[in-house]
Image (cartoon, rainbow, N blue to C red):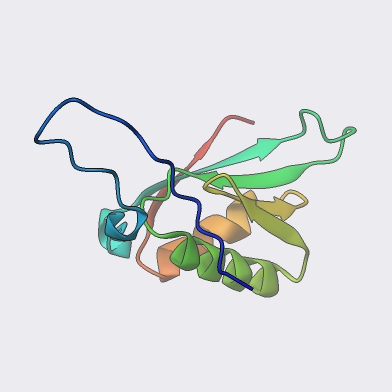
Length: 113
């Protein structure tokens, strides 16, 4: 069976036209912890009244964000997820998350209430 490719054929009258190549995607570089400015907030919108600690403003690769999320979830002893560039920790763990992030040299602040 032939391997399927998701290439779209585009017709162009431009002699200098170069089709887009997916293999040339840019790699996202993760900033070091000292240059990160994370925002920690408490969120309960669209969560049936349940509170979650939300960590946003992470700049870097998804793998590094997932690793940080996994570390925070295990240190807090609760569940959570990493979606759309945000880390969600179940429950109100703002102060504990701030302490853990500061130990790891991240700059962070607690926002909202």
